[in-house]
Structures are given as structure tokens and as C-alpha cells.
Image 1 (tube, rainbow, N blue to C red):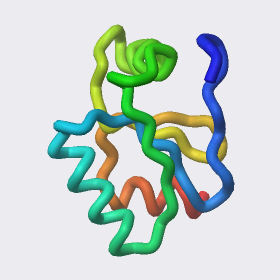
Image 2: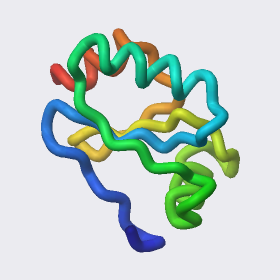
Image 3: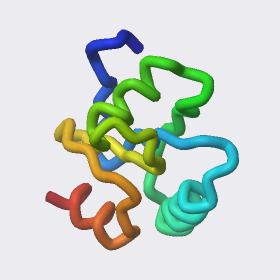
Image 4: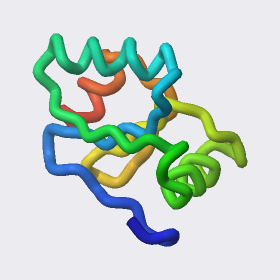
Length: 89
């Protein structure tokens, strides 16, 4: 991942920026697993470019989970219903 580009996930899946200690991230992953929704997790503490992207879309804050949808849009701490709606669009 370069500093200026963010990978876009395949249709029907999402990219989740997370940390190992984030409870909201764990909850969303559990919900995605139960619904059979595919995702890729990127730990922002291990990838500085990912942390920079999260800051960029969250007003300078490293707020997780931040997810990226196949259309390139991003959402911060979305509910399962919001994820399903975005993936269906």
C-alpha cells in the first residue's frame, strides 16, 4: 500500500482498518463473520500508510473501525445494517 492510494476491495467484500485492541472492530468482525461477508483487516498500528489514510478520512483522528467499500467510499464504525446496505448498492 502506498501513501497515496488505498486498495479497493472486491465486490461484496470490504477492507477494514483496525487495531488489535479495538472492541468495536472485534464486534463488527464477529457480525460480518456471522453474515458471511468477506473482509480484509489492516492493522493501522503495523502499517503507517493505513494509519495516514484513516486519519485523512476521519478529520485527523485514527478512528477504527474504518471500512472501505468496493466503490471506494469509506465509513467509520458502521453498523452491520449500514455495511449490508452499502454492499447491496
